[in-house]
Amino acid sequence: TTTTTTTTAFIFFVVEKYTVSAITLVASLGGFLFGADIVLVALALPYMADGRRDPVEGLDTALSQSLVVGVAKMMAVVGVFFGCSVANSRGRPTALWMVAVGYVFGPATLSAAGNMGEIVIGRMLIGMSIGMSAVVVPMYVAEMSSNVDRGKNVATYELLLATGTCFAAASDALLRPQWRKMMLVVIPFALALFILSMCLLIESPRYLLEHGKKEEAKDVLKRLRWKPSSSSSSSSYAAPVGGGESHESNLDRSISAQERKDMEVERCAETELNEIARTIEQQNEGNDDERETKSVLEHSKRIVSKIKSLRSNANAYQATKILIALAAFNQLSGSTAFINYAPRLLAGGEGSRFDSVAHSTTFAISITITKLLGVAVGVYFVDCHDEDSSEEDVLHNDVEKKKFYGGRVSLLFNGGVAASVSLFVAAFGVIGHEFFVLIGLCLFTFFFSCSWAPVFWVLVSESFENEHKSAAIIVCVASLFFFGAIADFLFLPLIEWNEGIVLALGGATQAWGAMYAKQRLKETSGKSLKTISDSYGDEVQGELAIVLDER
Image 1 (cartoon, rainbow, N blue to C red):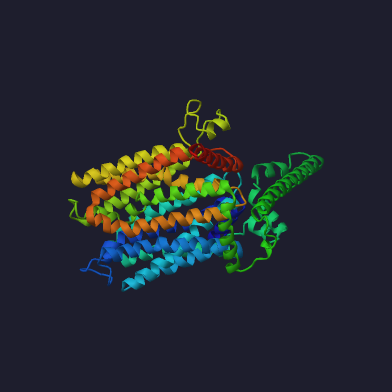
Image 2: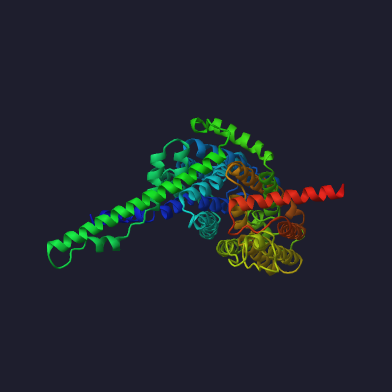
């Protein structure tokens, strides 16, 4: 039929001409589900605990609600290790469909739950998928992308995460207070990720090369990097009005052009393959049996061994410590806790003048829209740097020779200060007017989302050379979820104690983080991995010189 023909043609068009874009969108569904599931549970909590409608047994205290929210982040710590082990042993698409399994059964369990224990089980399943997707999706998308579009494609994960939060807010507005139906709205997207991961996604060249499949890796690279040109092909093969001799001449030229194109694609694929092989050799230095490792357990043991070896490299160890500190500031400022407990913030607690949860939908929609806008702004500015400045000027933050309107350090400092001021405005609103709370929290979400949210992931991806990269990334991402779990566990009891003080403490923490980033980080925008890694070594030498001077 005409419909079938059109659909088939569209599929071939997407797969052949926009392979990397299609792969990025499919894989980044993991980010969409992450954002949607987190916000849906946050918005559903008041209805789960409401004894007048459809309550969940045992979910009527602040401690139990904190456990339900925080257990997902705690399980995400485990998911980070498990996801990396599965991706390395069974492949990236396999890890992605396993992510989808948790996003299917987790919400389904929540929807059918009748007591707190069943709610916790559902949240644990979702938490595992959150942790797995946080490492597998950026890893897979980066490996499938070229150097030109890698940053843009990896940023799609964060953009779809923000889109997922907006989808959750819209679902709440349409379905409240039917929280069981709210839990089910993400399952079609999880099923789409499951099916497409198994049927559409192809294995990454890096994974294939690590497992000795060089020719398959080259074929994948040729497929990903080859861009068909319909206009050139049609003009090459078009027969002019005239004799057959002219037609044969054009045909010979078209064949020659196609051969040159094939040779160029072959050469580029071989060059990129050799670059990947060099990074693998650097990362697996001293592990000659890496290719023979098959089981998830063996890969998990190797990851633990690599994490222990971080101390042996001063640059990697220093970078890891700084990024762990940034992860602590990132989460302990309340960045995700404000979203998780959005309805409760506007419903109020001790020290607040709010008396109704009716504000929650307005807040949720506002905060999710500002988050999406903030991420989009951050993605644009994170790579902005002055191309006329030398690398040495950038590395040493020479502000007299260089002014930053973007870049990593500038975004962390300026965005952190603005986010801190926004939280103090929200704290003032607790004793003043609720309008200031709503405006302050929305501004905080915007400034945080355009600075700390994207910059952390960029720094994690570029602060380590290949030898220590995988182990360091696991530690940094797991630390982010660990501190997030602590914030989720403590936040609700604290805002019941005094909401204004908690908002002020969050603002102070964010300001401290901005100052820390300004003092300890050097600008890395546009720099090579080697240069960035060496900059952390300069930090170590500076600290050592200070210690020697004191002695």
